[in-house]
Length: 149
Ligand SMILES: Nc1ncnc2c1ncn2[C@@H]1O[C@H](COP(=O)(O)OP(=O)(O)O)[C@@H](O)[C@H]1O
Ligand SMILES: [Mg+2]
Image 1 (tube, helix red, strand yellow):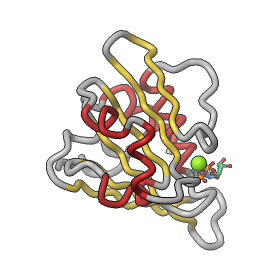
Image 2: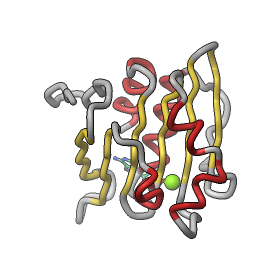
Image 3: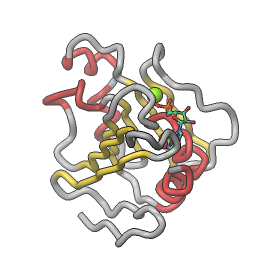
Image 4: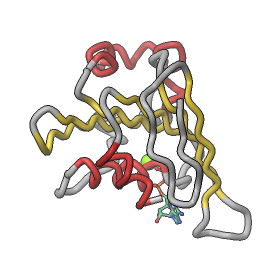
């Protein structure tokens, strides 16, 4: 999971929107933090559970926008977080935990990643990912076929 995140962060072309979903503890923040490392963020990458959005720009013209919509009450509330500018940002890699909560506001072109536990294997995660619309290519986890939109 960490290697995949680093590969996404260092190689994925912006603009890219990654919608992460799955239950608490599924590994959404682990993946998001690894993406941040790949982008070049060296400091702490706290879960934006309370701030809802954290923006990093470790190098000029390369932004990581990390969101966690767990505490969102209504899908429309994302609009108050600057959502329209975030999804239209040409330089941003946007990684959103609990993305389904944004409902109709999710951008047309995106990658959807569903994470879940594997019964009886606490260190393993079930991961399913697919493109919606025509997002840019996403690096594939090691040992799998390249994912193309
Ligand atoms: N293969 C794995 N992938 C991701 N997380 C894992 C894995 N194995 C164990 N974990 C642990 O599961 C927890 C996932 O937590 P977190 O990423 O915060 O979940 P979420 O953000 O989905 O609620 C972490 O404590 C992490 O160390
Ligand atoms: Mg989380």
